[in-house]
Image 1: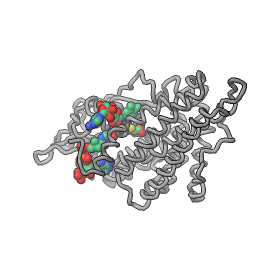
Image 2: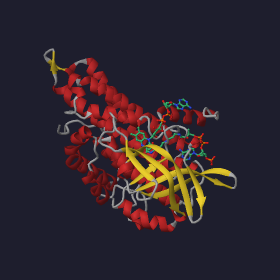
Image 3: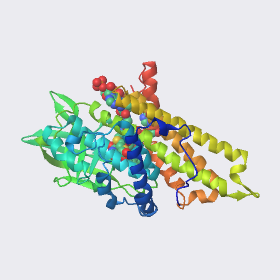
Length: 395
Ligand code: TGC
Ligand code: FAD
């Protein structure tokens, strides 16, 4: 389906708040999605594959690690530009935005924030150019919302570490060249969560693709298994120490998701408005009926509120004032709103709403995952609840 040109999801002229550079970056992402990604997405979703041929393009366009410094081959752009790119990529598909989120926020960010100079100068330029693909292993089969309970262990041995454990639900796991993996290491008689860089060739490292997903079908999700996997000492990221290290990465990724989910909502809204204006039932376009209009109005109102939340969050992030709890609010609100919008949009399309001739059912199925990963809606609600009451529901 061509993108309707006469529908504008920028109801509050947020465009005017953007700098020329931010608009330019956004427009590059928009063209890439419309011209290169959209013609492929239906096939990928049907076949449960990621369009690997576009991976180098993500690097060429500067979309990987785009806020990191130019010294490491990154674009050095601000967080509004990063947010706008996330929004455009997820207007295409959550799997496309996820690819960029994982590489940028969950692989390049920890290497940048916690890595040695040697790790940074080796990995960051390669990851920025998409010469290497990365994944992030935190979740385990029995430890999702509560990663502090993880069972994966690293044991110190002469010259390196031996890893044992299983990570599950890992985006890009089986197509990655390198994994950032979190494991407990005994230090001074205490278990401390540390981050390790693990190349795919390491003996004892197995990756298995998870099959049977009805969500994120244009994305690869995997299990990582470590069985006496030896890695050298220099693969430990020296700056990591405690659960706070992976949680800091999640804050970066959740920021991008808050913007991205709105992109998926916009795709659903645009498709629904276009459909409602043209679909005739009882001899009038359904968009002329008050009940349908009420649904469309609630969609654009929620999209506008989500855009403003993201924009303000971006300004706080660029000013170095953003708090993780503020990110929780934007992730929770914008994703659950997008999921709700996708459901209303699907309803407006009637039977056509369940086919992949339109983007809506694909976004709806994807958003069910986005509402779960990177902290479920409940976890973010409880995080904000803890912040405003001072009482910890997790204890
Ligand atoms: P808690 O005591 O709250 O925190 C431990 C330390 O970390 C600090 N902290 C954070 N720092 C930065 N950003 C955040 N978001 C932070 N949240 C907490 C905190 O201040 C503390 O610091 P310190 O100095 O006192 O040590 O830890 P807890 O065990 O009570 O857990 C809290 C909870 C439940 C919120 C946390 O575990 C959590 O966020 N759970 C959700 C797990 C999750 O989101 N997993 C995501 C896996 S990755 C993924 O889904 C990738 S999808 C990628 C894609 O495809 O796009
Ligand atoms: P659980 O933690 O078992 O939660 C189940 C339900 O219980 C949820 O509704 C939850 O909100 C609720 N719940 C849990 N605790 C509480 C509580 N204290 N109070 C109230 N309710 C609670 N992980 C990675 O590490 N790397 C990745 O790249 C990655 N990619 C993913 C890609 C996909 C497609 C998916 C589906 C997941 C991915 N994940 C990844 C894992 C994801 O982060 C976890 O699924 C998520 O954190 C939730 O964990 P869980 O699935 O174990 O759910």
